[in-house]
Length: 94
Image (tube, rainbow, N blue to C red; front, top):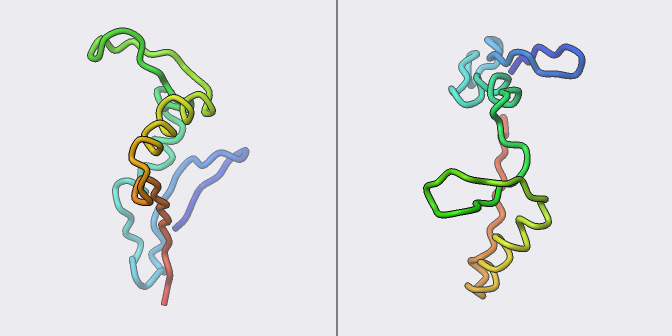
């Protein structure tokens, strides 16, 4: 993978044609990374709905508030080990 960086900001992501497994092909999600991560409408903080569902009214809240109000109660409600999940993505070249 090749990333064009300017002033610490990724401007373009492209495949490396010399990489044997991918031959320079990237999935759509990765190839549009620079556009998505720097998009002005990208969410960067949790939002809490105010008003009725469907009204589209939200206010920004801290990550601590989000975990306390949304995440932790769901984990406590389930009480099983399946209520907590760790997801790890990795690429290993052989």
